[in-house]
Image 1 (cartoon, rainbow, N blue to C red):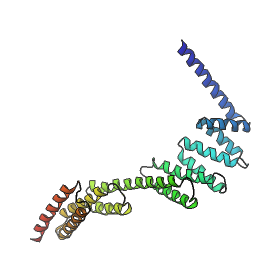
Image 2 (image 1 turned 135 degrees about the horizontal axis):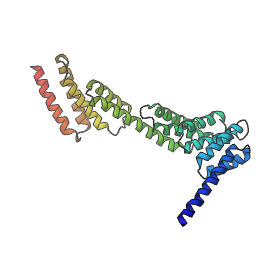
Image 3 (image 1 turned 30 degrees about the vertical axis):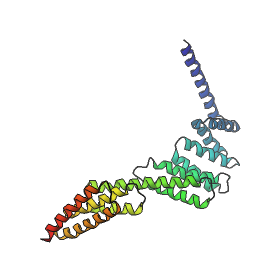
Image 4 (image 1 turned 60 degrees about the vertical axis):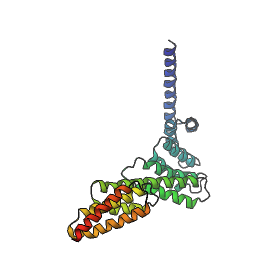
Length: 265
């Protein structure tokens, strides 16, 4: 019985709360809307706060409150994970209020929204490059900012995301047995991301791809490509003498020498 009473009272409160909010939305009392939006925002009820701030932004657009409305509208979208809209609004703040008291924060948040948006952009890395660019620009414009350390951390994280995408794409060429493309792509990844954690694995795949390309080549190209495989093996062993791929690399070297011997006959 007590549980039913509790549910009933909660339902009444919910209906009453919704009714008050709907009345606020329809109201033309904008100071009252503003006070309510601030309360909702403080309670982290970002959906209701945003509904009111969007109305307030339109109403106060050409007043001294325009800067504040834009700021809170942007943050409500950010908290609701509407990163594309939030980023646009933070950027709008920077462009419209270049001397505003929150311009540094809003620039940082604009770049942060770009970064957040990258997590959904599995096939399109353009936002990753854009976020890196904006974080770098931020550090140049605000070299003494309290956000500098976070910017540098975010740049490292984003570069890590790019390097992993490049690593995965490069391995794809190896898996589909396009060894010529694999060699080129793997080398480019190592050049672009020298700090890549999977560097040893990729250097081994370059060796293996070079060997397999040579093995399957036409006779007039086979000898030169086998020589390249020997060169790749030597470089790999010099860089990673105790590699977990050492046994496989030695096997590749042995078979390469056998094929070279046959090609000389």
